[in-house]
Each structure stands twice: as C-alpha cells, then as structure tokens.
Image (cartoon, rainbow, N blue to C red):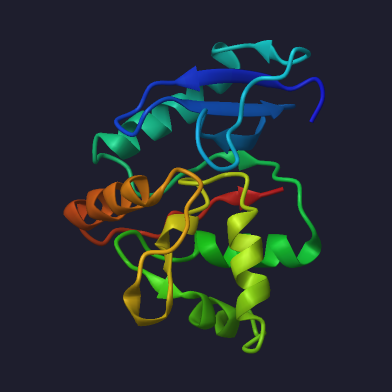
Amino acid sequence: MPGLRYTILPTPIGPLVLAGTDGALARIGFPVGRGAVTPAPDWQRDDRAFAQARAQLAAYFDGRLTRFDLALAPRGTPFQHLVWQALAEIPPGETISYGELARRIGRPSASRAVGAANGANPLPIVVPCHRVIGAGGALTGFAGGLETKRFLLELERRQGAGPSAQARLL
C-alpha cells in the first residue's frame, strides 16, 4: 500500500502500527510475528492523523471502550468484506466458531474460506477477528499470537458485555 501515513501506538500487547490514508484506517499491524507490519520507506509518519484511532484504542485497552467508531478502509475481496462485517457484529466478550461465522453470513459450507478471510483481516482488534475460535472452543491462529488473542478475550470478558464493536467499513 504505497503512500500511506502511519503511527506507532504503544499498548499492553506491544506496539501496534496503524496505517491509512484519506482519514480512514486501512491497517493495524503487529511489528513482529506472522504478518508483521513495518512502515515502508514511502510511508509518512503522522501521529496527528491517527489521534482518534489512538484515543479509541487506548480507551479499549484501559477498559473504557467496547465500541469503536472509526472510518475504516480495509482492502479485500467482496467475500472478505462480508466476513469482516460479520466479525464487527460479534459482541465483546463473546466468541464464535468459524462454522458459526460461515452460517451467519449465509455460507454454511464455507468455514475454511471464512477462516482464510478472518486470517486476512487487516484491522485486528477494531474488526475483532480474535473473537473467532476453532471447533470445540480451541484458540486458533492470530496475527499477534495466541497469548495476545487470549489477552484480548480476557480483557473483553472483564469489561463485561457491552454494545458490539461495530465499525464502519468503507
């Protein structure tokens, strides 16, 4: 994604790279691990452009926010966008299986494709792919690692059930 703006946000799970353009968040990445995101040479650091995202993520980690209200611009296929929108509707503190997510989008036999779309989510935490678990309740892959996934789920459980963390996908 050439020409993006970015910021780096310190969090309890380590630094997050936030990237986007035109007032919309396009990427949230972990600087290490599977799918690590590091700013490209043509990206410009712009902390002020991400003031709202930084504030909302800080409030989320402090336990004061369960619903993000950010303009988002993730790149993906129409199917991925369908899955990501369904992810955004999973209430904080709840988990569902890939099969259940496939049923919710009207594609009950597409749990593997749903898993692939979940894994391609460019906006973890805000679009809560960490709320999807394997059959039988097993924690499965997450770009930030399973310890981070466990931390996020526990954080949300401690916050209690609140409104869905729905986000506006552009």
